[in-house]
Image (cartoon, rainbow, N blue to C red; front, side, top):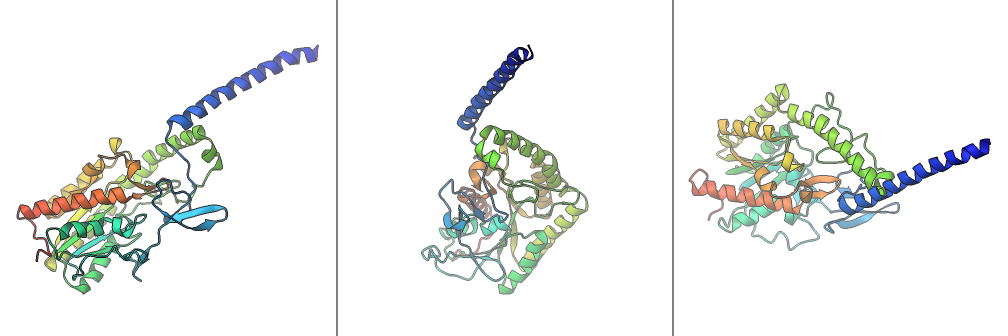
Length: 347
């Protein structure tokens, strides 16, 4: 009798399990078909990748059985970008003494893009069409914050005055309070923060990866977003804006003009959570008479993910750099036409 009673129960359990498996299979097929997500293996270095989905990067070697992709970077001992040695045709513009200085962090350095695709190089090419002796010096440095930018400016002025200084400003330049907001897991720019690791389960099951993506996005919107927003309040904002004011004063004293190119974070442009920061920077620049190029409206013409260097590296890719260069050039030429700016290198 006991065995007879167990059989129907076992069949019920089996039926439920099979039904659940069927539902999960259908959902998994739907997830793979409809969702454009892929869990990527990543390194704790943000300049190498374990996949090459756009075919843009080159094979650098292997880590065990995994191919490693990226780009060769060439730079000065100080960490400033130099032209790619393997592409001698790139720096084919006539050489003139630099008269435009571009400052910033890894966005300006061009992390993840070739030298000829970086916005400072593209800006120089664009300026040369109407200002044939314009020459841009890219002093972007990976990891630089606003205090570092001020020091790099002082260092760069030893080479002589620059009539125009452009600061490629990124929203983490004031620094994030990681004691109050421990950012673990993927940030808005890199996925190499502590506490986040590659998951083979996510890589093999699209449905599970989708659910985990929702969790990641919720954490981003709650913890990490708050860290960025609060970096523009209180003492951290006071120190940051004081440094920006010092950059402007230093440029002005040597007879130059400062323009801030404000990069948005490449995240959900339709529900962009950082508009408040853009407004604060706009208000500050207006009060100080600093030229401001807010790149958010131009970037909004694209999906944020279409501007990523790589799914695990959300620095701007070559399209993002082209948009930035085009917008900066358009802005500078319009200000010159209005008589509000004298661009160097006209003759």
